[in-house]
Image 1 (cartoon, rainbow, N blue to C red):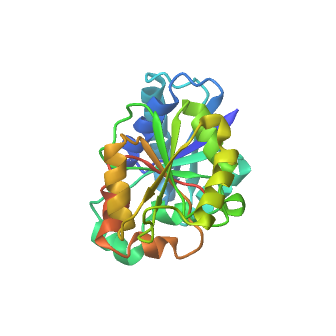
Image 2: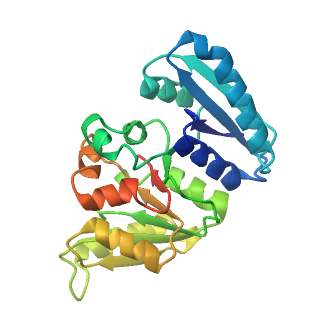
Length: 262
């Protein structure tokens, strides 16, 4: 049984992420959904139970397998508690929403969703605020093609591809790309081809300066339904917020982003 954790605070953003996940997991009988809510006031316990039960009833109408678990918890550190729950459940995936509403505040304080994406517990799928599930046919994996055997989370990526029977597009953006690829790129591409041979991946090498503009345009051109990124170190959040292009990717993307660690 694969566990998928969906944290909700009952905002429209988190409810949309929960509904997206329910549609995504509809009919998948080997998957259990865990709805998780943290409350900061002990008086909110009963209300939290009522809201969770109501959401559970709604998700069941979407065809989610009947095995939905509701977990509520009193606390203040969402990241620590959510990470602990995911670890205890050996979760395959955490699904979280992200909103542009508080974008400038989050530039200063940090987004819980992106903080969770930093944790090397399990992959985190970031759902844009207006995203609606229409299938995951085309998956794009971004790679820098450096030490791919050691740095690519193969198992997590294969789990997603097998779950949705998706086509894999592997994309690299580097302004050094000219007429032909370097020996290093050719070697790393060969290794990547072998790692994902069962999925017949397609490779794309884009010669542009701006990674985020390139990925955004590529996603539109190839009808990408899910973008996989590999956070390599603790500067991931800083990079996510370092430019307006990043804000478009994190806050304004129309497709989900999956952060998966090696």
